[in-house]
Length: 103
Image (tube, rainbow, N blue to C red; front, side, top):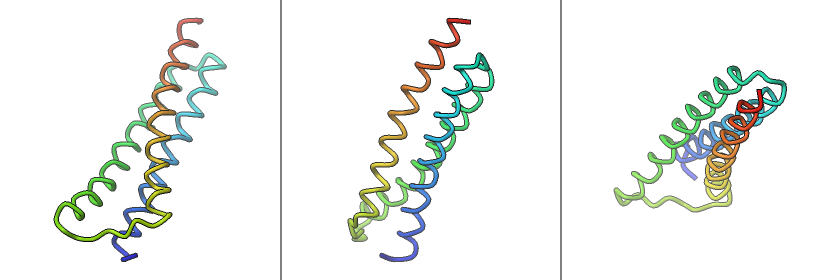
């Protein structure tokens, strides 16, 4: 895998992982009634997903321009991280809202 592609894949994993971690932390804060802080963390999670999407877009653009991207296990792993993080964040938003309504 070329260095440029490896950088995109690794950043996709890192940004997606950070986003999921922020979402998990947001749920924990909401449990203790700190919903304002939880919402701030969900915003940070969203920002990391936007950044992850930018790396994914770079990879898709390369392929659309005719550059062959080797689909390695690492590439698949990066896409899995992104998709599970997106789903987790959406669920975390709902959970935080439930805790917010209970206060």
